[in-house]
Structures are given as C-alpha cells and as structure tokens.
Length: 278
Image (cartoon, rainbow, N blue to C red):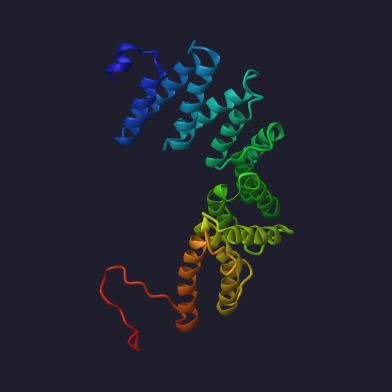
C-alpha cells in the first residue's frame, strides 16, 4: 500500500495488492487493484520491450491465476491486445501466451485459432504445438491432438515427454473409443524407443504405456505382463536402471491384480482383512 501511495501510477504495486487482497478473501479490493494495474500498465511510457514484458507478466498472472472472472477477463484482454499490436503480433511467443490464457479459461475455439497463428510463425515452439494438441482433444479431434503431441516431443525427445504424458492421459480418458488414426502405432514405437534408450523419464513413459495397454487396448493383465517384460528387457544394461525400476513397480501391481484381483495398500489406518484373512 505504501508503494502505491508513493507512486499511484506504478502498475506493479497495484498488481501485488490485487494478489494479496485475493488471498485474504477481500474480493472487491482485489478486483479494484487488478483493474487499476491493467489500466496503469497500458499507460506506461517505458521502452517497448520493457512495457511488453510488463503487460505479458501482468496479463498472465491475471488470466491464469486470479480466481475472479473479471480479473481473468481483463488479463486475457491485456494479452489479446499485445498479440494484436502490430509491434508484437509477429512474435510467436506473444501470440502463444495469449492462446495459453484462452486455453486455461476453456475458450478452446479461440485458443486453437491463436495457436494456429503462432504455429504458422514458428512450427518448432514446443508449448505451442503441445498446447494446441490439448485444444484439439477438447474439441473432439483426438487423432489431430495425438499427432500434435507426437510432433511436439520430436525435436526435444524424452525431456519434453513428462509434460506431454500428463495430457496424453487426459486425451485417452476422454476419447477411449476415439479414432486416433495411425497415431497410436507411432506412439507405441516412440515409447519403445525411449525404453530401449534407457529413458530418464521412465515414470512418464511407463505410465503412458500402461494406459495404452490396459485402457485403450483393453489387454488382459497376463498379456500386459508379458509385453512389460519384453519391453523392459530392451533397456540397456548401463543407463536403463530407471526403466527397469519402474517396470518392476508396475510388475508388482499387475501380478497382484492377476493373482488376487485387487491391490490392498495400508495407508496407516486400521488393518483390514477379507474372509480369507488377506
């Protein structure tokens, strides 16, 4: 508050106050300072790149983190103005940030159009292509979504796969019986390549493999176990430790499902046994 009193035109003071008031549950004060921050940042006379950075940081905070619809809408408006400004409209990251804000706010059609703009300028942007895949999935286009996810990880390989894996799980949950075209075969080949190379992202790789095998392909547990063993055996002797360790955890769970039909986990509560003492 003191900073705002000393310099009422400083947008950052109002932005911080908005966040603080929001966390304190003072909704009206929070929205007031968010809107004031948005007004002040647009009047900022600092050099273009500095002002752009201020607009993008404030817009992203408001659009993606505020719990108030009015604050989120104003954040999207700020990012949209930057993406439409002739000075910045040809900067892929500016347009992609605007698209991401639309995505977070479930405005999927608008987000897809903005991601298309960004991708047309820079096809190598990982988050642009991956997040466009999320939009396509939400819009009922699973084959195109999977194609985008696979394209997004191609240049950076397994280091990017952990992010994509989370959204692949969502895509498969929402489109279990969807038509993925030839994408699933490409995904299976990619998973095998990661395992064979001794992926450092073993947890993400095996999680996706498990969902494809049991959820999409509807394999029996015994069949999944056989394929698990075959794939884990391809991990290199040196460097494949993470792949084998994660495979061992999954094997443990699958064997118990095969033999007992359920997995019992003691989470610290009272012991529970069935009629057979298990």
